[in-house]
Amino acid sequence: MNALQKHDARLLENCEVVVGVDEAGRGALAGPVSAGACVFRRNFFSSEQALKLSAQVNDSKQLSTEARGAQFEAIQRLQAEGLLDFAVA
Image 1 (cartoon, rainbow, N blue to C red):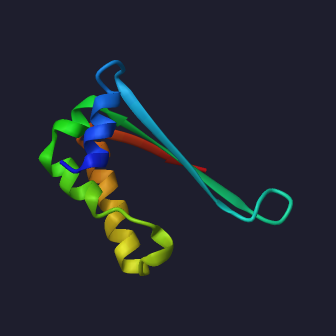
Image 2 (tube, rainbow, N blue to C red):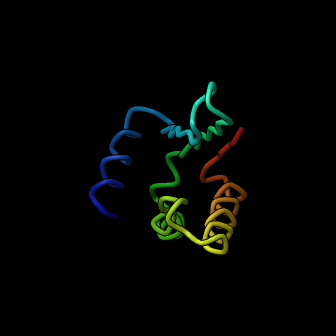
């Protein structure tokens, strides 16, 4: 577990989830905007598989279309296992 993951895990000592939110786009006045949110449950941080898969998720703008698709599939697997939830709009 790296320093950031340890920090995030400590946040869960007093709560059940950690939520991350991000947006991409030029702004409502300049064009379309997409927003996403991810809910990490406490059990996410105790799963070696979840930590390994999530370590591969990086800035999507720096990835090929194929790599982005593979990371999305990894996130969907973590969701199916009940380790996180997410939404994009």
